[in-house]
Image (cartoon, rainbow, N blue to C red; front, side):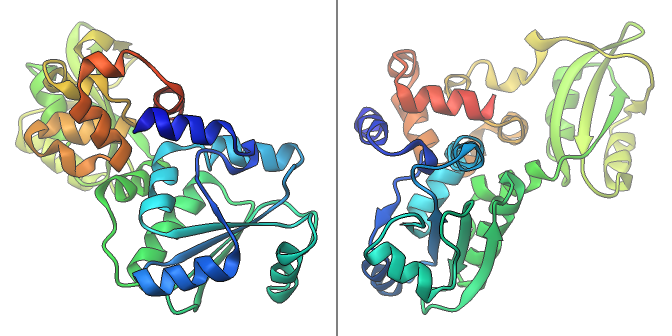
Length: 287
């Protein structure tokens, strides 16, 4: 299945990234209404300038965004630099021709939820989350995590007796977006990146007997995500926050995977090691 997707994507314009956008607005709008899915309309210049190509590379080629647009939305591309039906749709929505990317999101019945002009990865992720919520549809775990992850955060470092256990424990705390193991002044520590108020993180650390420390971190990559190292998750390209959450509870890990990641997980190591274009894209985007 993934190899077939890779072949199909190889033939599409790079401006559209990894997303298999349909063409033809009216058919897409009718399908969105029939399926009860929100509609995502990309107004884009194809072929495009460096800004357009950058959006295709940096946002539309993020595998989790591609999975969300293809599975949770009806996604259609309207080229803003051609005549015919594209031009008529462009004029209907008042979008300028030969313009940078604009992503417009609608409820299944056609109510506009957002107009995102040359948006960042974080803006697109949050927009998709909001659009699903406003449409009364559940937000998949992987897309919710990506929204948290793109908010970034501030690093905090805690010392403990065993950083394998500490990383798994602190990775469960709400607001944590990334963890890594290492040493500070010879002590085992976990550096935890968290967004928002750090009081919950400090309380969770204190409750487990971990102490805040300062000083230069000497990372220990071989000890990162120890709980994952004996599972098939180690063969699946994951974002840092996906790794953090799954490392904290491997038995519940599938809830955080996107459809393509879930397929990779179920294929196991033999096929994943025979890397194709889509797997390479996953590795590049989420490393």
